[in-house]
Image (tube, rainbow, N blue to C red):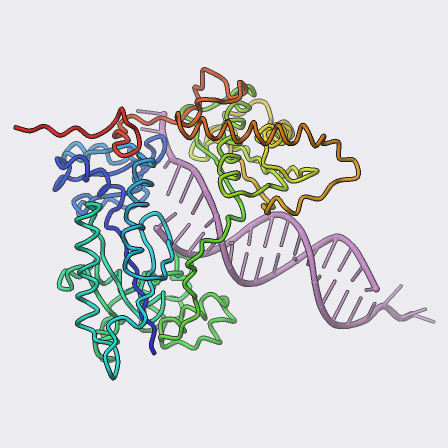
Length: 436
DNA sequence: TCTGGGGTCCTAGGACCC
DNA sequence: TCTGGGGTCCTAGGACCC
């Protein structure tokens, strides 16, 4: 039986989330900005039509924004994460096998559904796709598109078609058209649109005369494997309908956990760098405990602002191995500050510090060390301390209880000038409806 | 003045071992 | 004068994704 994979993807996800609770934004040009209100990370169709590219710095389009009345919002990740959970829960009802691929998209395995004697009932499958769209629209209030195909790569491509070509009304199944029509379709799509083919590889492919998706599909997988990599070979096979990528319905534990931010204003003194490093290590440690892992090493990273070409530039990173793997905020912070001390140089204006927890593992494999001075009683009470910390911060809000080393002034904190309320996760920020 | 954050996988090359 | 070879592990860096 041939496989059917669907890729369901929200349209302009962050912008659509904002519109759910602020309908005045519907039909208006809207962008959502990154942390520090730096760059555009989501654009409404109206903004895309004005030619604003993903990742454009906000300050560069001030004029355009003024002329067209573009509304810019700071990102509200709490809201987006909550709506994402609602979408995923809704979509889980359509298939026993779901892979949540990113905050706004998931794969669903529809194999065996709408099968009739002799094969797939394409019309029924497309109806099913419409049902998915309608239900997510009613239950969560967000617009999605559905792409279907016999491999993940084809489902991704089909989703692209569903989004770009209005005649399909948001649902496209690659198998719904004839082989000849498929060739025509693929010939009209640039090779860079394929999932896994980025800017660099697209350029190199074009130098070899491979311009369209059709060119890529019909290229020789073995020879491209040699000049590129096994990744590209798999992409070609997937485009031909030969499945190389499985649906991962159980999310594997993260192999590394990062936390980094560009500062609200450049930082010159060591005290503030240490405060930020402490804060980010604390966040990373919370995520670490949430997934039930321990870290074997902490990496610290600092850098100046690369866009300020006249400023002296510096960047450095160091990895501090831990004697025994831990999920204890205090131990992790200590290692991070130790690392920071090693790479911190005076005389620079720092823009960013980042923390990465590495060598993650399940805690059961904890190996006692020859010079391990950990007192089992202390170990136990520290565990209790960490879970209490997490419980309070979960209930009362992040940062309610924190290390004094995070500081109080926090001038380095990110800027967020126009953030919408956390409509769905904070009692004091609930949406209010007025009756007239 | 103002330019994000968090991940994954693959490969090449060096270190090391026998 | 003559100076191996094969395998594994680790890391850094590049490319990609959203």
